[in-house]
Image 1: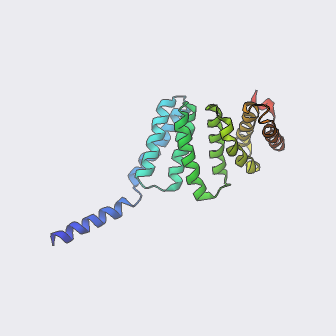
Image 2: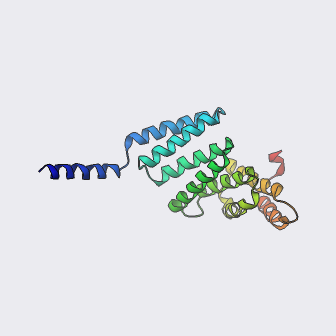
Image 3: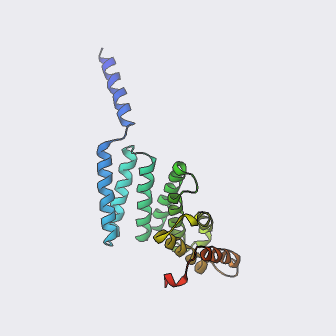
Length: 190
């Protein structure tokens, strides 16, 4: 009888462990709010820790791929701003992988992650390694307007300026053509 009871408790524990935990969702949301508030006030060290904790809660609380991707994206963005570039790259790559598994390779959310990865590569002084991200981003650039269009234009101009000549002259011209097609103006970034 005791073995049956212990076995039943184990089964219930396994089932509960596999379910989303509402307490983790509340905690994740609190950390996400703290991350955003701290980021907006320029306290990137506090924001980075809050974003990291939001990601941990999304993962250990089994809150789903969408929330984990979002938490990793936020962590990656803030890590880039805090100049924790290796952490940013790792988080953004994982977020990109998760988001693509949800939305497909050409969704706007995937594009946001591509843009952040491309920017991270510029900050790492590895723009050559980020060309593939920019090329993928260009393919979906027409989906963006407003601030997001401006961000994509910023990525393009960043690569136009950062890629060395003469080796990447053709690639710079390709990115310049894409910027013109988006009606981007260098004056927006001066």
